[in-house]
Image (cartoon, rainbow, N blue to C red; front, side):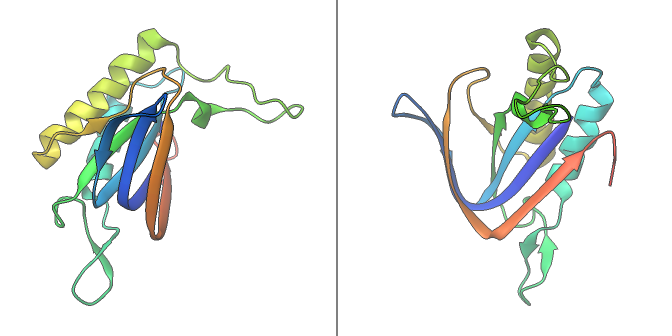
Length: 150
């Protein structure tokens, strides 16, 4: 699994100009599930997301997690995170997991985050044509791949 975490002042998802979900201060997480991803990948990423210290403390040092600052999380499925651009100029999505694998792992990631934070993880709509808006705070953007564990 591959995720892009953005520290935000606010974020929202709309479909056909209708607001579907929104958060205030917290994390917008784009979630890409790949062929071969497992429950272990999902659980590791959820734990990393909940405890990642990218919010400022009283000294202006990124030393606080979304838990520490009582932030919210909006998780949006995004199969394009698994794009391959190795050949040509048109991305291939052959590495992106199909619905049968991706939906349970995306939902599981959101459920695990809810368990870890004690706050409902807000979601986009899996497979929908979504418009995502955000005010990136910093900006702070972190990419994490469960296969690399960097």
